[in-house]
Image 1 (cartoon, rainbow, N blue to C red):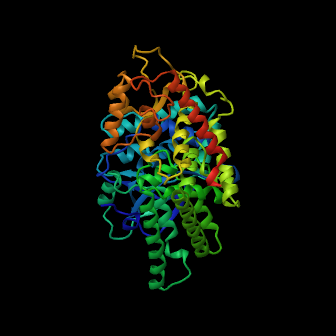
Image 2: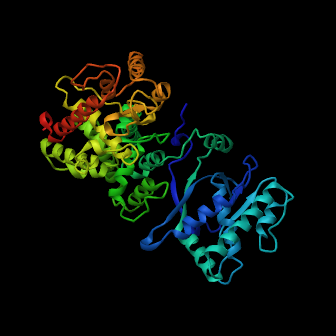
Image 3: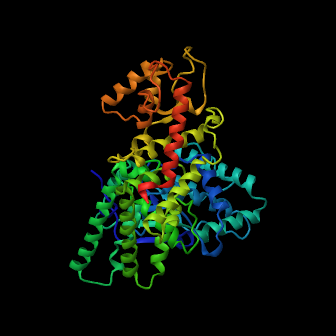
Length: 519
């Protein structure tokens, strides 16, 4: 059963720069495994921070930090201790340089002997202690930070400058568990991956905060939150349809898929020049915008309307089979959704279709290869793959009868590639790497038939389709010799078949580019 962020977090999502943590006392409980970061993780974090430019009030988000406030005034860390400890160790190193303050916050560990004193006294002369596994890793981390500093920083002043950057520009998104929460249970769920901290989950918690809404009537507030939550689930459910998802995307991100919509909208709202490379980029953008908004409720409603509109636009693309096939091809060949929107925005249906077809022609690059017989498997494999994919799609689009949907989900989830029709290991004819002897085939079927003769390959292809498995229409037509004008020898894929096949590719692509009934 999926457990939402709302079940474990209260409504307070807070941004905390390292400077804002001054005076905080963090406590790492014994149910956690202790500090375990190695040189690789430490170098990656410091490289990111060092390369980050804090110009124009930009900030670097390090990670969500989940805590539970305790009666004694300290915060029990439920998740995020590895980065918190690394920052602490760096600040202990920097504190030994001129003009650098000590760590702004305290860090304590439970039931680990002298660990607290070891951390407090951490220095160049006091960081080696292998009496416990925690001492060992903290000492190793200390040495790793020192090595990184020697490589990347030229002087003690540089260390102090980086320390200032960390204090002023690095921040956590702080989540405080509500009263009555059980930290051990939350820790277990987070670390088992049952509560993925995705952009979408964070944004949902951000947008549905009660402070965003002017109404103080709990019943009315619940109705607003419920309305958005129901629509949210409807959109997420729709995106979980693999046929829909893989039409728009190359991979499954795991977890929630509604993130896609927020990623696209975040670029529009990114007024603070937040780096898109940051893992929580969309959330950080909307957090910044909402923080500055004069009317938070108005912004939430406007943003949610845009989310629904964007989803409806994708649904329209998917349900219109002509758009589905053209856009699906463009996305598979590297065209971004933003580019597609720029091509069709403000245009009537026929004009938008012309723009999409023009882009498809550019992506296929058939102008460069006017003589398709010159294409070679060794030198032009990627171009051949595009042409063969478009040939299959164009065949579906240009058919006069009911159009079938090309299964982009099967095509992307399985490994499909360019394969030989007449096997190069079949000695009934000379090896041929030209387009006339190539087709799209999944790797599983290719492993089955390998270098078998043409009639045997035909039998395997027909058998595969009879079992309900997907075979690209054009691949099936090849083995049925549907493109051949002569049928004197059904046991071979000969030169005449190859010429007729290429002629059909050229004819189909030309009809596709011209639009025909689509316009």
